[in-house]
Length: 294
Ligand code: KIV
Image (cartoon, rainbow, N blue to C red; front, side, top):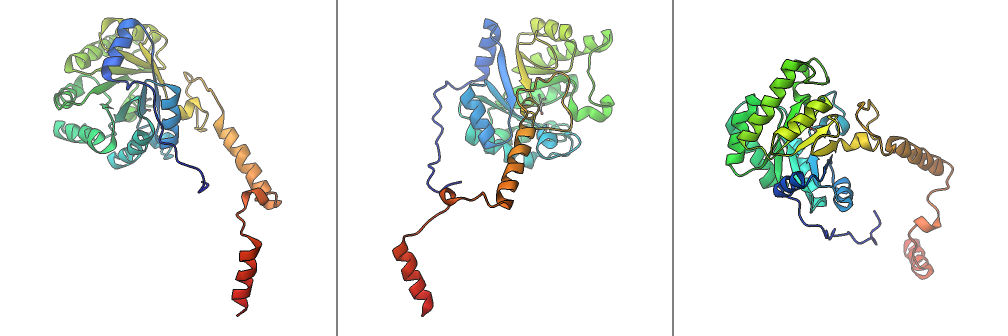
């Protein structure tokens, strides 16, 4: 970065989005927008674009850290990225995703780790995966004054139990269980629910049946809001693109093109040119040459 460039302080003119805003948007039938972010510049751009909520998702593990699934990412790694996001985004509601094993062992762990997201990383809320088996954790976290977003359907932290990244709730009995779980999480105090990879008509029915907003990913247009993994939306993650993603850009290709041009420019000495170089006056230069002659 040039030393002459002043660092922006990101004056945000938007009103801060809160969990109350989520509720009001559902009541007014206004779609809620959410995206994932893991770093300062992306969070800054998203916040300025006006996204309602930013999720520091544990998808970090796959799309940024290069792991096969979300299981290896730790609480410390999540915190590190959440802190960067909160430095960039001032108006969006910021949600920290509790990683695998940070809330499953005990309710005490769940509350402590949820608290770390707010106390040390500037998040406004947390998200965790699972239904009835997580009701106690949700209740305890909410009881500590921390808003909780639930996550039902395809819950990637249970990839081994689900037998892969596959759609959920496609049979009458699993659909019924999902609807019950949505009610249980609502009653436990969750302020919102992510519904991932579930049939569109089921997601729509759940959205109508509960009072808290649903945020869909691969769950159709009947949800109260939508979320995508930003690296999928931007075409930055080249391993695979889920069927439900709309790619708004192909930044992997754009990055590769820019890197190739840079390599070529350096190798052919087109870069750096005079305009990219720092100069000193002839006077100082001559005096320097005199000095080193001694
Ligand atoms: O980690 C994540 O990015 C998520 C979204 C897919 C909702 O949980």
